Length: 287
Ligand SMILES: [Zn+2]
Image 1 (tube, rainbow, N blue to C red):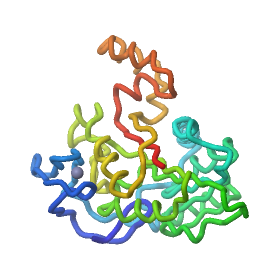
Image 2 (cartoon, helix red, strand yellow):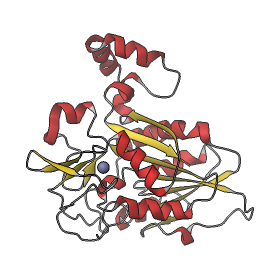
Image 3 (cartoon, rainbow, N blue to C red):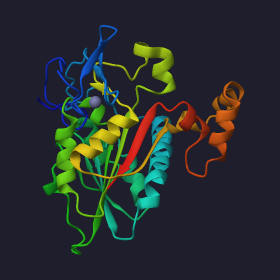
């Protein structure tokens, strides 16, 4: 199957998988527009069409307000990776780096950032803003600069909101896996079919769109890790930082689900009540 998406845009035809594109499980048709994996729950979108991001696609350069929240969001993602960072980690490789907020956030951890994104106008814009290596090509491990001559230097890879664009996610994740050395990390974040937005809005949710080949589940992320031979160090749910910080959302959740909200508030980590209870995105940290 051809590969397409934010990081790997190649024209493709509508998705008609015979088995789950992540775990190989049997599929069950749903609502005439989707097919759900009986084993891992991955929800395949049968109405996808190729979107070529090379000339921009839907991903335009953000204004200052958008960029502010994207940076806050990137910092919150790094807080999820941070417990697993070691002094030997020197490089951060963001595949599908978009407007570059993860690259900027990486610097606070002493990581030298490298970005890949096939969206050429966005990479051209990014190059005017940051002085770091960013490539307007699909991921290629050979392009990662070996700034640290120390063979023990580790790398952290990220695929945030990339693999839901791919009809062969295992192909890209396997290539990243092949580039990983012992001790390297891989962070993956995806929209979920199990979050509150999909449960309430269903196929009207804006994450259900022709660019998204699938909505994931946490078991699907586990299956993906297993198929490429990586260990799950951490997994969880979250939402975009703006909603995650919202006081009115927090109050609404406390009113609607007081016990679950209080339990979420007591958890000692970087996830908010909204991250846990709305749970529209799923993430894993793999090694
Ligand atoms: Zn599956």
